[in-house]
Length: 354
Image (cartoon, rainbow, N blue to C red):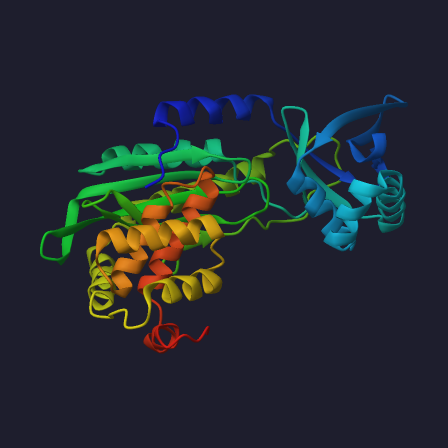
């Protein structure tokens, strides 16, 4: 499993971000791109005088802004690179015409997300405050890996009290992954995790999780967004539900179903040329060339020429990639490969991309 921050480091960074981030709900008429697309301005009237805040723009903010305004990504990027003045004209023109409200999330002087005004803020600090005490109460549970990236927070928990053998000597333990995105890239998620002791690989079981989407009531037209009592009450009810989900997430019956899927995967042999199977799998799951090379290396080194061996080669490769978000994608892909329909596996073995 990809190593991230220690739990103490994660808590310190989340606490720091909570103190410095600022959120706004504003009308498009009060927004302006400037400096050849290098800065974004929000303007408000206070005591009869204009007040402006200036921010740099994260890559995700650019992508969300362009998407919201209906500017195709390729055209947006081309203007940004080759003709930034035209980008500014396009963005400001559509902002002035749109007359809509949006939530702008900022951190450390950078606009990091351009979202709907109905976006419901479920912040990482609130998630941590809710789930860490619950994890602490779970016997045998510990945080194996955690991280906060520009797009998501992850807390990956392993429970040593629930383990099974996939085959003799190959022991896996149950766990959970808790994740959240403050910038509109996904819901709050609590998903099962399988932790393989032989090589310390993690596998995210991403089709059995619970999710809560960041969609709420429309926010009123305000300059800076603050929690009101109603929102706080809604958040409290959600956090109580989240605690219950985390408590029940390490479920023996569900874990048994997952392990049985893995046992089935040990019986699905690779009958075609191994490099061809890895190449087709990489195409189907969008692996990069370097990832494909590592998967082939670990599959051959492991000597387990089965679907299970292939899935483990993918999760082992996740430890090599520098990006924690990407590593988690590979951990999820490892499960998807192990659990793929047998017709799809037969096609890959036959050299056909499904």
